[in-house]
Image (cartoon, rainbow, N blue to C red; front, side, top):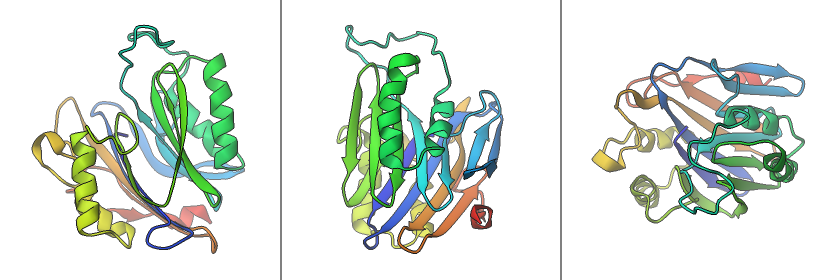
Length: 242
């Protein structure tokens, strides 16, 4: 998944709005979100090649997503470009979804990268107590996301030098979404180098997801488009969360 948009305490306190496009090889098989684990109840997509996930939710408790991160340019980094990882990053996201909360997931992943070799990633986790991004590219950095809109692509959160992030933030400022459906035009944007919905080959946007959570009440909506968001209707799969 290559573009993640999250609204913390948006449109009101205790609320989460999330929109995500997954960009991947068009030939890589995947299964749309379904009940992946029954205890605890986890609804997520599944990568048919490595078995992990890119985005999902543990019912009523936790949301997690993982994005590939740019390779580090520092020659002293613990991660060397071209190194073969020990394990898929998607499995890391699935492991995080099994945790009891966002803080526990962050503390766990800080230890996990010391014992198992992963390619660079940004792991987003959120629950009723807060939202965090754990970024790994040979060094671990954890950032708490405060109320407002945030965008993650292949670099730092809200990277001012990322053209796609800049476009998304511009659209968010012009018309702040109040419902997840209002994120669809942003996720469907085609603006050259700043495009959010990618029509490229052999890699491009292969699916899109929307999640809306009211943490105090536990009310959740989960929509998924099994294709490019500009042309594929979103299906409501909220019932899977019980």
